[in-house]
Image (cartoon, rainbow, N blue to C red):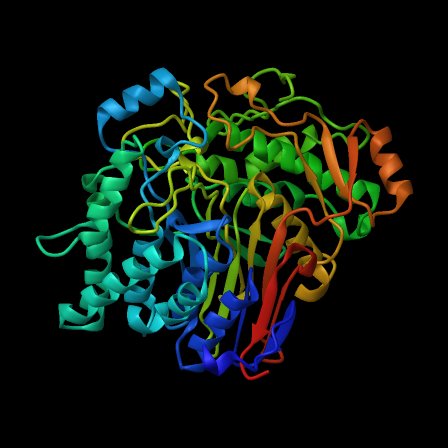
Length: 540
């Protein structure tokens, strides 16, 4: 990484040629190095993601997941890449989960690792570089590191490089050989896949080479809504991303700017909209390849109009109130009062050609039993499924969990203007809503938006609790978390409306954000420094 040794990496940056904002500074440097070597945003994002799996290990890993949104400047389109592993294919494994539940801190909670195929797919479809070029900064980090798993992962990644070199043919064919080596496809190679299967068996897991070889990264159309002339893109209902879209549909009917930034009315309205959207998330969302999610109804203007009056400006709701978007009723049933009841990192990149990427790498990493010969630790995302028969997010063979990971891209007049990525589980789209409103309603640039005070609600199901009794998974009904920079008078007024107000000095979510200013031709990128986020600009 010699070319970036003199690079000053802080928490905000501007550039006309390209920017990267992510977690650790070394991962940002990996992305900038690729941009300096004429790579595009896809190339730089993959380099950053791979490096984050070392620098931010614990928040993400090669054995984890990374959903991506990408704007392709040549095609002027946004696509979603489903960097999410699936449940085991063996029906007997699913029977075990349904009988015993989805365990915590056990390899049985791990889905198929998705990061390597996500990276090779993004490079094949949108990139320009080889895997060997892209992985070089990560290998340097591993070679310099001192964790017990570093040498093993370095060996595994070099096996992937070897597979690319001996494949011959085009760049795309070499990248396919990388994926095939990791996932054990085809007749040749597959040593890494063999090591992974051995580890799964030793640890008592259900995943096998057949699960690995069946894995693919789906390239899908994102979901979207318009808000104040901006088009907001999210991944589909295999994530919580549509919650942001539903919240914006509700909020478009209110004069938030007129209420005033961080006024009691503003915070109350946004939180009550989030509660309604989250209730629909918990009621309807799941892998759309397995369940029919009534997304058209959930996003419709009519549905927003009939749900909007449920927001009482004088009183905080303490009920769980999913609606009925099929029969167009504001409530599915009477509002219910239910009992109360890690790790992710961030990456946004833009290049001089106008391509933009938002990615949210994660894993909630565990090292129980080590990480095997391949050095690939595992995550817990199967715990984002549940074992409630008939629920849209109930575990099934080969099903994607409905995850909290939720990158965001925003366009105006067909061109990208914002990319946002947030770490923080169920807080992610709540923090994103704060950032979007900071920018759209109150004109704040990324450097101001990411450090502004925020708010969030605990009035939701815990996305990491697979308890089949879903009514027992609610976090803190009525809870409203506010950063302590918000005026005490506003906090007191919100408490008077029935919110259970909790003050917090640390960031609510860990965001990075970039803005493409098409009037000036300058990119602005920032990450909250109090949350360990970093940013850098190319040539600046």
